[in-house]
Length: 222
Ligand SMILES: [Mg+2]
Picture (cartoon, rainbow, N blue to C red):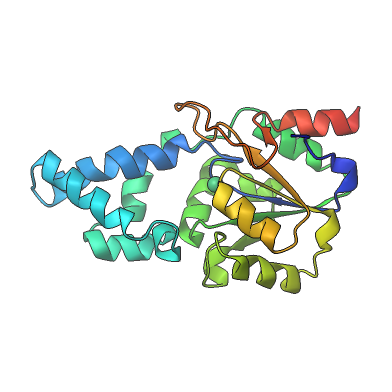
């Protein structure tokens, strides 16, 4: 599937986790670290903690609560943000993402960070990457009360920002999110094939796939 050309784009919507930043931080936190710390904090056997955390998380998959640190702090009776701060060494740009953002600064494009992350997590990630210095225009789905997996989110964004749908592109690592944006009339989608540097490539056929985003701006600038 053909990679969209940046010269056809006026507004670029960029996801954060798994697109600009390595999803290894999030996968490690939710799939390993939280179980371990939950077992320690609540003095519970590791296997029991793992099952409980996994099953509780699964109930909210794809919902806004899935992305809400307040919800999970209350549900698990732990301070999720404080626990995330214990593993901040894993908050890193994906390969090529920083160069990509630096290249974008010299291009005449409106660029908006569009994320499901909660504001406190965005602030934490900015603190360790400087992301918002490069991408100050930002929308969290928590502002709209509906996640990016729903078309209602995109209709609201299109209206709020008066987006020209035929020249708008979304880059995201979540196929459900890309599909919702496409159904809402956003013309271009680009999927990240390897959002987590420690995991294998996810096979995606519905959308064009790219990994090193710096290739996108390099071809446009050459
Ligand atoms: Mg993502």
